[in-house]
Length: 359
Image (cartoon, rainbow, N blue to C red; front, side, top):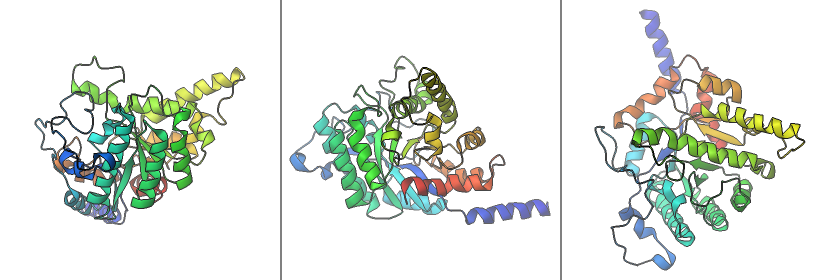
């Protein structure tokens, strides 16, 4: 018993020395809070409260909490309390309703809404506590304006990344040349871009009948589509220093997809068709592609072994999905895993996120 207690105390002491960065947390933005941040032609106009600023994610009643003691309201003080209670050094903040911004049909409106959200995020969170890092919502409907907005948010607000909503109504993947202006600016500024899902519309499974089915598929399917488009359209050959993160789908799908794309690349090369400078999995290993992982994923050791240790990042996803008291358990439980080395765990907790977000 004495030895076990000593080992436990040693592990606790070691964990106290570990830096933790949350690579994917969320705000719960509301129309009432954000609407005062409209600018330009929309300043001072009245707005009916019947229609939301952002589109619905997919028509499912996601705003109602059934059975779980989930967080339903959050502000900057809630986030400060959370990171201090969890001993998190910094948190990178993403939207909730704003994850549907790719569904906006009016391109000018997409620009207005993105600018409004970014102004609100900086004023309500990032400006108040420097540990809270903003991610710029980009109006991908209008790539040149998205590039301008990324530059503005990085230069004026110190935001650490730009968000590409994983699902859009643009009938093109993010590998399309139309999005090159965004990639050019991101590479120039040395800031990453992130692909984040949540929307299930347009993914081909609207016929599924339960939210459990939808939620199982919506994140990984959207990420697989965009990763395939970006890699096989040669984005990383054109922008070799670009970093793109794929968030909230876990990490276990990455070796599978890289095997699939490597096989396609091998067939192309046998046909003397060489669209890429290297095989797809090399883009991951050279640092173009990062992912967030779930702390309880059983295949993380496989991902680390097959794809390398330097590209998985720790997300809390706070305050989404789970009961309020559960989040605090993730860090110690992940540290207790015996299938991953201490070196890998330190990289996942902070070192990889520091490199990705250039923090």
